[in-house]
Every structure is written in C-alpha cells, then in structure tokens.
Image (tube, rainbow, N blue to C red):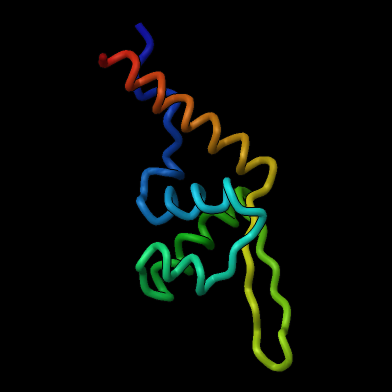
Amino acid sequence: MKSPIEGLRKEFENRVKLGAMSMLAVNDNMGFNELKALLEVTDGNLSSHLHGLEKAGFIRVSKTFAGRKPQTTYAMTSKGREAFESHLAALEALIRQLK
C-alpha cells in the first residue's frame, strides 16, 4: 500500500520555505524585503531558507542596484514550479484520502 505522505517534498516542510514558494508561485518575482515583511521573519531566517531553495534549484536570485542601493529579487525556476506543484498535488491527495 502506498504511503499517504510519499509524494510530499521534504524541501517544503518548513513554513518559511512553503510560504516563500507559495508567494513566488503567484508572482513573477519578489524582493527580499517584501518576502520578509509578508512572512514576518528575520533577515537571517529568511536568508537561510531562501539559500536552501536556491541550492535545490527551486528559485533564482537576481541582484541589482537601484542607484547605490542593492536590490535582491527571487523568482521560481521551472524545476521549482514542478516540484512545488507535485508537493501540492500530494497534499491534495492526502486530504482526499483522509475524507
């Protein structure tokens, strides 16, 4: 018998990573400060979670300057979108199985 949690992705177990991926799924890109404010986390906490998503190839980081001020934005990669949609499908299947 197939485990009801088999399709869930470990990379999305944390609420910060799940929240960031959810926001990036519906926005082309988002800035660091925007993500930080919406997720209500510290710079270091967000940075470490985003680094993990980047390392997994799920998000892309762009660093630019607006005048002299650095701007960091994040976007979901196609690999990240595929993994996230697979994770959501597994969650939906789990919920349907438990009804």
